[in-house]
Length: 255
Length: 51
Image (cartoon, rainbow over all chains, first blue to last red; front, side, top):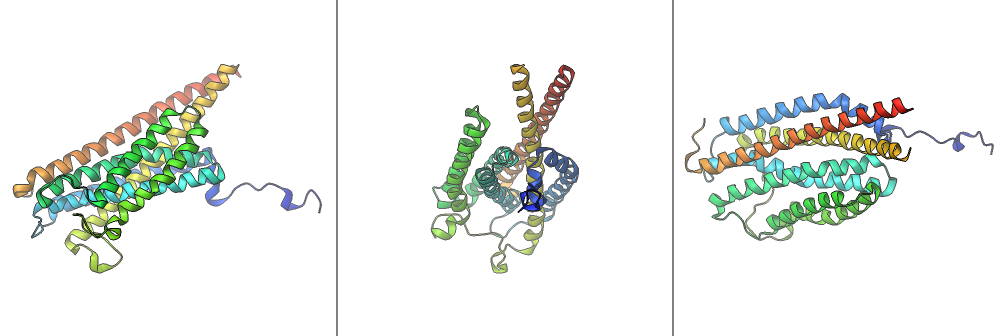
């Protein structure tokens, strides 16, 4: 087989993997970010105004049902943000793409805010409905542990100077924390006890909330997903620029 | 403004705190991004000049 055979020529990554190139990733995020900011603003605005002003009270829960438009989307994103970080961490571990490690790092503060919103709205909803702000219920407890994992993950990134070592160690932490992300989602099914009810939304239509709450809730969920994507794309771009700045400064210092 | 009845405090605090947290996250993210962009531009300008 000759050396000029096409199998011996290294191929440039194409499709999804080509975005591991920071320049290509930045170009892509610059193109899609304006649309993402606008769409997320519109969905959040429409969904929350619809839910807050134009939906009726629930016959049992009264006006507290309006908290669902914040609580369910934020809890959903808190868990899914961790899964996004898990996928990005696995890509870093397997393929060593810096952009994916930086995307995981960028998603953590967004995830922690989503978790905080879910915990807070859950507490103020729980107080009038369950008679307590907090209970050591399986779902609530696993959610609190997920919140602590988010804090630990961010602290670990901040504590280690070498970015590759930080990416390695935080990836391992992310793998471990995924247990609690799964538990936050399925604790109600695993242990049929505690105060928290099952899914509010499901592909199984029988489990869904009533249509009058369901449609504005879907719009709010779309808003939370889009704002998460916009924030993570923007923050990943920031992390790429910070990394490049540090690399150039290190080169300057050597000269 | 809808009549929130006896649960007004719970509903309003949930909305107030959540929107505040989201707004703080967005402002912090945009500020950090602008600072990073400026810092990179300065360093790139310097390294081009030195080259």
